[in-house]
Image (tube, rainbow over all chains, first blue to last red; front, side, top):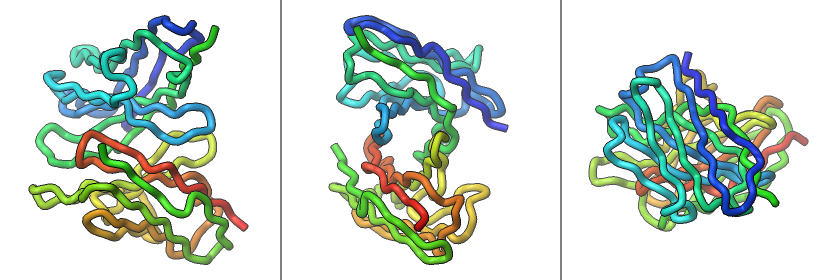
Length: 122
Length: 111
């Protein structure tokens, strides 16, 4: 069974930094692209970032580019996002998502964690 | 950037009746590899999103056959042949042609 468990969400002041983690199990982690997707309170889904299976390529939404850094540790089956220069606009539930298989041309996000809540407030 | 636009934004459906949601993209989602990178998700109340349909019309594992997807290029549709109470929630389309973008969501409720 695929399981994704996010952690690290807290209340942080504007301008602050935070690192979120996602622990994966139930699949061969280093074979899959991984994503971060967020959802502001009462709003829709916003894709944030992805990292390829080997960590060699990373991509970001314009809204977070230059402030967020996605990374992974395949030896620990873990995904991370370092978030800097946080603003109130970054307040959201952050989900990690399992992406496509390294040898496929699929671009799905097929499993999601339960999310971790980041609140940016003074 | 590719913008995804869903209509309607909300839908109230009688159980057993069909429902349909439209999703339009600002650019074609047909890739040169022959695949069309359009996906549908359902976020039930209080839950994480779940994948329903991938590449326009393929049901994901465990998805009931009352859900179907169709379309091509920039215009896509999700249909529920007979809505059940468990289908309530917000439906999102997502493009995978360039990075990822979600539609605004369509809230489906039961009459």
